[in-house]
Length: 410
Image 1 (tube, rainbow, N blue to C red):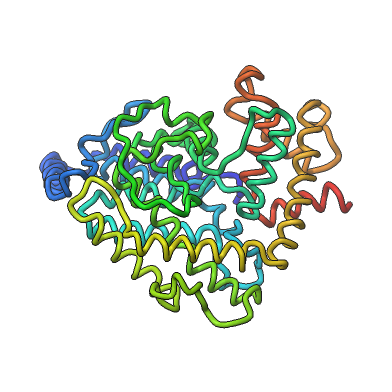
Image 2: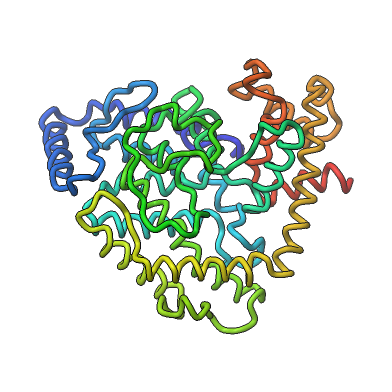
């Protein structure tokens, strides 16, 4: 099977039958609608009600069985970008060790933690799960080091350009993925908002209040995250907190497995109260957030817990992310992605020649450009360098390494 074909493309007739099935009686459809209304009624007062969604950019008929957020979850889960996460680095690149966390595993952990918090608070778990499963589809190969390389290369081309995985994730789902013979998954506003606003790298956040006055303009890819408003729903706020909870302890476990940390599982003194294992940390933080967010129109964490979490995350930065082994690995990744960007940026300036290149890696890039949904957009809207980052960001770790080897080793 061609790895570039998504499951939606492969089984598009079956998916259309599911969405337009007439094998369900009107009575059954009415019962499902009543059950959905009852679930909405039982949600917390400030939860996002399914029936009050702001909808999709392109209106669609309702599904007989699934809610709008359940449909979004399915579209994300079956997308090509989601499948590739299993071969993308979280922090440590070690394809020979099945116990090292991949980007896909991290996403599943966020999904579980966020759903647990949301269920306890009476929030819309279908919305939470759709945001959680889609929150990292915009990541590059080799984790955040790859993200930093692409950002630096874009800025070298044009200081106004930048690369951030949050906005790229929404771009992937809005433009690059295919669904029903068209481009983009046409997700609901609330899911798209949660994905572009999920950033889990702001360590000191104590409370998140939904920005319900947001408009479609606030979801623009052109707004850097430092200037972006927070999530529009409590459900999006839960995912944003859960992102940090999911990786703080798991990264310590992986650091032990890879020898980055030689001693036992250890937190800084200011964070010891969270426990001495990943599961203890998760339980401590989940309970704290539930306690401090119950019956409120915000998702909050106590002063004590946020200090413990922030110190643990900063300790990870010093002991793990800046360790000699990880820094050396990042240098290796940087060389590869810088080399790929340079080769493809040269290729796109003469795409006809690239199409006839003797190098398979260049020809495949030319094919990608030729089939790109925005290939006919004016350069002011779609600079050539963005075609390059779209292509590289979609690669898995192993495919990026293979392309680099073909371009520079052969």
